[in-house]
Each structure stands twice: as C-alpha cells, then as structure tokens.
Image 1 (cartoon, protein in one colour):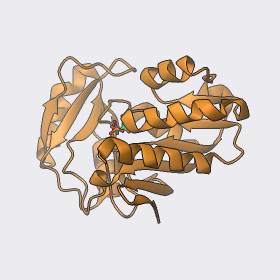
Image 2 (image 1 turned 60 degrees about the vertical axis):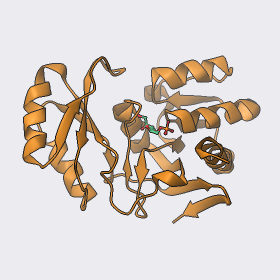
Image 3 (image 1 turned 90 degrees about the vertical axis):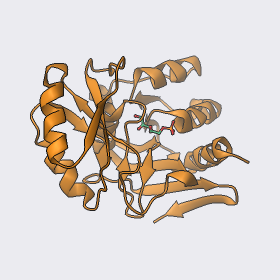
Image 4 (image 1 turned 90 degrees about the horizontal axis):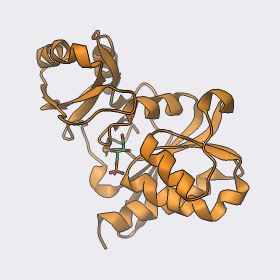
Length: 218
Ligand code: 5RP
C-alpha cells in the first residue's frame, strides 16, 4: 500500500461529495487524475465540468466528460482538487503542478471546496513544500528580490510556462505561521499573478487518504 493507493482512496471518497451536482469544478494533478478516472463512471449524471488546467481538460475530454467555460457555468456547487500541503485549518499550499491561478479562481466561485490528499501531505506548519508563486515574466527578478525580503529563497522553475503564459518561482525556506497574512503580503507584490497559499479561501472539506482508510476533516 503506497502513496498512490492513498491518493486513490481519497479520490474515490470525493465522489460522495458530488451528490446530485450537474456541474462541478475539477483541479489538477496525480490525485485528481484518479478522481477524473472515477468521474468517467458517473459522467451520465453530469452536464459538464469546469477544468483548472489544460492537462485536466485533456484527461476529461478523453474520458468523454464535457468541459465547460467558467464564465458560462456561473457559481459551482462543488470543486474537487488536490494540494501539496494541508494543515488542520484546511489551509493549503498548491501549485506544484503549476495550475494555481486557475485553481484559485475555480475555488473562489465554488460553494464547497473538497480537497483530496494522501496522508504524507498533512503538516503542522505550511512551508516545507516550496511555495509556488506565478509571476509575469518581466517581473521575475523584481518579485524574487521581494520574496527574499520576506525570508524566502525563490527558485525559478526553469523551462516551465503556465497555462496563462507566465513563470513560476518556487520559494524555499518559509515557515508559514500565519498563512492568510503571508498570502495577502505576497499578493501585494507587483508582478505577482497568484500565490499558492490557499488560506483566505481554504478548503471546506479535507479528505486524507491513508492505509487504514480516509479521514474527513474538519
Ligand atoms: C497543481 C496542484 C496540485 O493539486 C498539487 O500539486 C498536488 O498534486 P498531486 O496530486 O500530483 O500530488 O496544486 O497546481
């Protein structure tokens, strides 16, 4: 029983939170890929899905699930997505897959955000996982200098361009004691498109897959 099994357990549990929703939001990553595969079995119940990345869109379409434009879909009843780290306040670090901006948008328009992780991602303090920050390319060095002033060690994710045409700085060495405060502080830096702290709009439900089953928080 490994991490992949635990991701899959959490993903299957998330199906129960879809209830009778006709349109849902779907995130990005290896955990969500399990969810998309399972969604294929109940696709007849759905009008469609709002996707948070080109990668998920491809997988959804391959499974025969219609992908909808968020502007036409309106408010969503439920959004299911993974995370790189989660604490017990359901605050998250996201963006390991580089889809953080669209993920934050879909989370913002969703009534209930169901986050699915394996148990290795549950931490006391966020920041062990390098914090992704999406940045307008010409502002990369400026934003990096500002992040150093905040105590981080930004590392340019070279060769990676986001779905929005921007770059990612992965910030090492942060111990994020006050996630909502740091989220706001980094959002204020000119040139930042999005920071991968999801604390001002945390998850509403966290499903933690482990060898013994799935724990539901809170
Ligand atoms: C992508 C994300 C993912 O949810 C996060 O990176 C977790 O990915 P995985 O399920 O592959 O561990 O935020 O931007």
